[in-house]
Image (cartoon, rainbow, N blue to C red; front, side, top):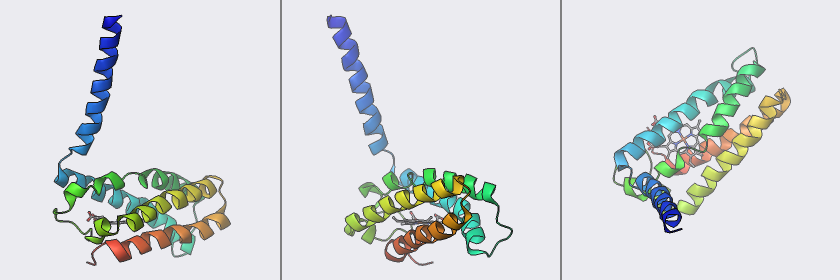
Length: 152
Ligand code: HEC
């Protein structure tokens, strides 16, 4: 009995340590990771925006479906990289990201919900739906960059 409890305690301690390890990731690494996630978001967003706006033709529903699915998953990734410990690191994130954290978090949340909707219509090969929903996603990118990203 004591042994069983011991194993459970070790398992608990180990899972706790995994959480701590993530929180103790070095600030410069966190910045690199969040920028990488954003770079990939940009990569898969580009062709969707191009095709949905008609700037790139022909419209390719398979590419849009694949990209939107990647985008939906990537949209969950950057946020833990905006940890307090990264405030002093060199990056394009403005201090407002921490000073107005509720607003920042709300936009991060909205990106996830709007890209999830985009993924749904894209996988359904609903071209009209994509053309509508891509605009909703683009608005969230723009709103967040406007308030929280340094202009180049
Ligand atoms: C909730 C805020 C937020 C949302 C939403 C958001 N971004 Fe960003 N993005 C940022 C911030 C902040 C940076 C700067 C990060 C840094 O330098 O550490 C950034 C950086 C970037 C970069 C530059 C990456 C680099 O380091 O070179 C690209 C590309 C980008 N975003 C694309 C997008 C696209 C496309 C969308 C929408 C599909 C989007 N972002 C949505 C906040 C956001």
